[in-house]
Length: 320
Image (cartoon, rainbow, N blue to C red; front, side, top):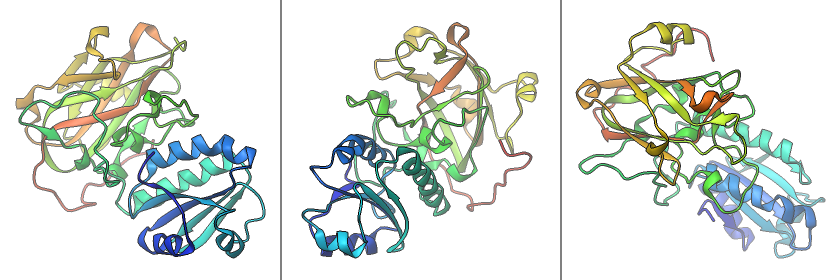
């Protein structure tokens, strides 16, 4: 269980959390409540995926043990989920309404990103999940990604937002408890994706790690096979432009390149990636002519450089 999922033992503890964390999501439940138990694994997975200490905190409030809190916030149905921002209740979801809960979670993600806290620096205090070994002498610099200005084209609308690619948490698909949380991205119309990644400064990229974990039995969804990389472009390309432009590096992945964690560790032509301010990752095709391609996590391994002023890089053109 994530450290960002907190079990409330008293009103004093709850009040302190409301002051300490910018955003709090509270699950008011009871152990005898059937719907509460049914939705609990989904709620825990959301906390594990999205929780950030002192920024976005998920809590569980047993109404039998905390009757004063249940009365204070007028909890009349179980479960009840209440969203708090800056200590004030702003939204309420009554019942095990997964659709509405997910809608609010998407709003939470937007709120967190707007705070500039959306990087994968592991602010929850846990050691970040590692999909593959990091080459000696280098470090994970994924936290250098300026997530608010990333852009993903041809993504399926029902999949996770682009920020999930850079999360430091373990992909939900690798957990033993299979829960309906989409913390991955997947292409929509065909097996192509275009991802624009700006960095907070000029970085040196040594290795690209891509994690892709298609579900068993879904042959129409595949891992990437051919990936083109482009660096230092001021904005994203469209697909025709990407096809007509000489890439900085072409990557062709074979089945043996993927480890048991579903991660491929790709050595980059280091001399070409010494001063990288933006990177475009173009999944040109998936394996075996699949209908769609899936990405769960992306890691950048290398050396961080001097940060530029935040917001100086502006996205141009159409939104994806």
